[in-house]
Image (tube, rainbow, N blue to C red; front, side, top):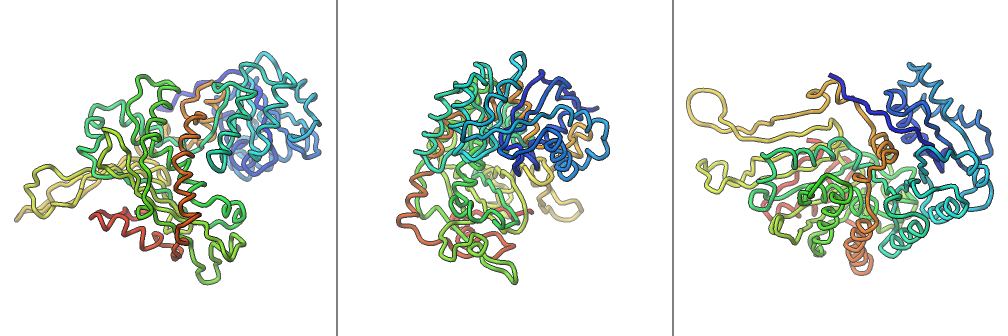
Length: 483
């Protein structure tokens, strides 16, 4: 059985920054894949814009080269590839100036879905939004997609939202976080709210703690200057990990609609308690052999920016009081791994003394690699003579369990199609972004003003030793990265 592909309505997608890295690696290959499986209708058009002086043929050739590099299946689908390339247009537009807007206005069709994807620096969001509205290019039904970072702090996030809202209503703005497009992240909602088995256990009475880990094996080479201005807290915790925390901790929405889901996510953020400095560990990777250190890659020998952060977070509400959430993310760690581990408490009366304190029941939700869900259980070890217990896992890997229905789909593919459908469920609302910054700002300010420098750690490990102690001091242990 194969999954059902439902085509979207014809559309004009205007891609600002069409010659940029994100467009080449993710957006355009993702759109081609949707075209190849029949979800993107032949009446759809992709209009690339950038400051580069090129014509349509040159843009088409550049996209062709990108697809061959980042969507290798394109070479085997030459007929489809030619049809896809025929849907491309190019208009040279100066996003921060006056040139090209009139030509773009003439290229847009009024009778199809209009979407404007701003794959550009946030500094240009306001100018682009203003030009789209003032020149009559965008209509009341148009959608505008913006990439993170959504500000550098609460003040800049509010300014950015104000720039967008001066020209578009909130229901037209799609703030994209690709983590929300991952299959397993969405399956977390299905697992919790479509099964009677789990929701009664999803609270502090039964859950001992939750670990959310996003580990990367690579460093910041090639983007060190940018990363040094943000760090792991701004780059990962305030957005990606925050979204995973919200979906794990949120209350069941009254219905599965975009605003109902996002209302519950905002409630989680607003319930987050201040984090004590003793519950935060920051780190910075050292050099190893000929491989440079974080400071080498950042080009800043005195940098105090963290490439690793771990923290203990508490949610001050009825469901989660007494159950800590441990967040961990970093560069140059043992493996590339993203997962949510829900660790359950021991039974209230343990009749097997050797198992006391083991917390042997856990649900592991793997986002990458090998998306799937593992349930860890305790059973009797097979064999005669004695009664010995062993821990085993019930494992469901999507690729194995669903076969052809689990064909890989990049997060950007799903999210862009949701933009065309007008479904904002997997996109962040403006108040959600501001609430996340309101929680994160005091933490960042605290260590920038008074905190110690990040602790050095060796590449290929689990981060600083202090991060291990964050759990060990309470009788808990981190899951092994990549384990």
